Image 1 (cartoon, rainbow, N blue to C red):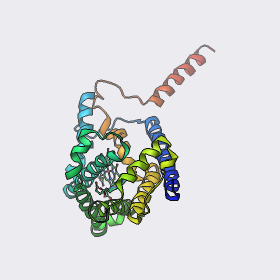
Image 2 (cartoon, rainbow, N blue to C red; image 1 turned 180 degrees about the vertical axis):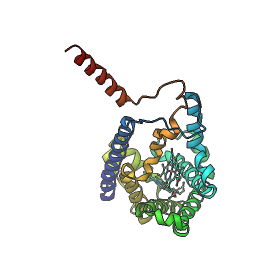
Image 3 (cartoon, helix red, strand yellow; image 1 turned 30 degrees about the vertical axis):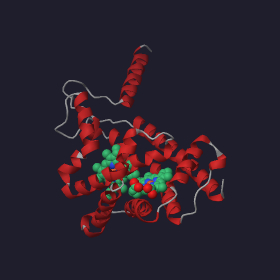
Image 4 (cartoon, protein in one colour; image 1 turned 90 degrees about the vertical axis):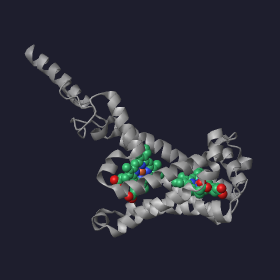
Length: 256
Ligand code: HEM
Ligand code: HEM
């Protein structure tokens, strides 16, 4: 146990609770939000299975972004897939027994850091040099990209230049989960602490930021609705409730 271990232990527990509870709460709100109108972007699938395939293409290939902006699509794909590989590589810090697949991607997966950084830098440059994008960019749009660049930059520095004591980092994160306080200790490497602070900050702001597009994409009515308005009348749940109340009211009036 050391001071840094306690400090970051508490920080990561707080950040984990905030991201889990915060995102779950946002999902609850999205779930309950009525979609009063039938508005799938056409051409849209005619069946539920079709919708599943459409969502799959949207989530894994950014299909609608591809149709609208090829450059943004390219840099978006580089960044997101780079990050996916990086995060999969990180799974080892949280496992006693590392899964075969996670071990397999380690040697080449580390270069994903550069793919992620190239994507992020291009996305940031785009916000500065494309006039119409700069015009609609809010400070938080820049902040997200800079924050992710700080995380990826400090990570890459550790992997390729300075090297942190990854054995202790792993022991620390496993001890956080098992509440083994004797192992709540971290090495005082500034780059590692920068990396971890930025990650904790990202986790804390996640539920109140645009990063919510990750769960949010699944709730987008233009993407998740079936084009069946000719076969089935669309009534939003709250409208159905009002309808039922209306019928009840009419019944009461009739029998007075
Ligand atoms: C289901 C998972 C995800 C999907 C399908 C997805 C999809 C997308 C798409 C299509 C865009 C481009 C939007 C546009 O500008 O028109 C985008 C932007 C972005 N995504 Fe994601 N994303 C996912 C998860 C994440 C996660 C987990 C993070 C970060 C932790 C993230 C960070 C970002 C950032 C920072 C941008 C903005 C880039 C910019 O400033 O231009 N995404 N995402
Ligand atoms: C609690 C969470 C995290 C911990 C404990 C952690 C820890 C580390 C450590 C110790 C390294 C150096 C690895 C080495 O020397 O081989 C590293 C690298 C890296 N980290 Fe993280 N990190 C975390 C979360 C994240 C997140 C959320 C991102 C991205 C959004 C990220 C991006 C990177 C990148 C790009 C690298 C360099 C490439 C690599 O080794 O895969 N890290 N991280």
